[in-house]
Image 1 (spheres, rainbow, N blue to C red):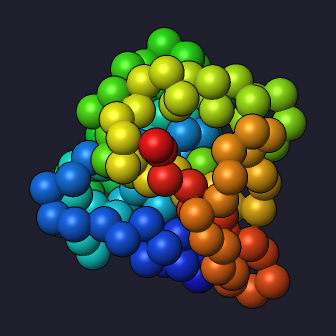
Image 2 (cartoon, one colour; image 1 turned 135 degrees about the vertical axis):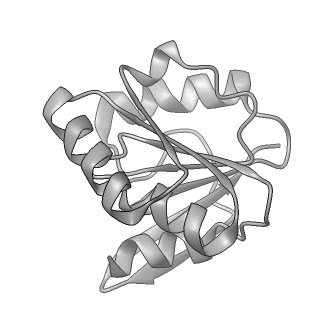
Length: 138
């Protein structure tokens, strides 16, 4: 939970913004963002079992975040003010290309641990020895 909190802090979220968590896992990042910052939150999860876990967690947290089952490549991210991810390798490169095409200028991308292949970090902070990389779409 500590890393999730650090990621939401690093994003500089403002009430009313729209955030996406790509590969949202159990939903903790997007649920924290909605609860603590008053944003509209959307989580996208590929694994059906993990998706169900996220939905249950959402019921327990009474969160207004929306969790969607599916591949992030199917979702329009153009309305995002901030995007969270904890992805690596080829998947991160695919996400980078999609974000470059769809995000509006000024949107923030927060990646736990892994670097995007071609984007330059705006800043890096950390949590428990794990780097949190913040990118700003130009």
